[in-house]
Image 1 (cartoon, one colour):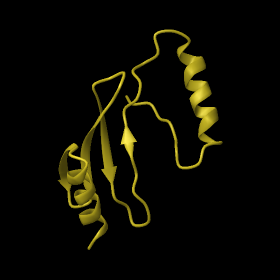
Image 2 (cartoon, rainbow, N blue to C red):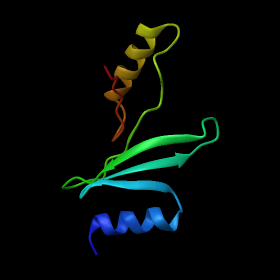
Image 3 (cartoon, one colour):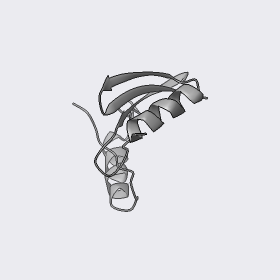
Length: 86
């Protein structure tokens, strides 16, 4: 059984809303408490499964401080990093 087969089986077992994007990627809607759903992309790499999620819109205040704080955390967290989109 391949890694993608295991992931697909787990997504079905958990009854999550998902779709296959290509042979190595899945789009998953995770149920939430504060938001109804969090959209995630699960790309399967050669050595790891990544989880990509959109977690925050542009901060309404202290934008530079928020971005600075997140970037400083990038160097201290294992397997978690923050980025901004265009």
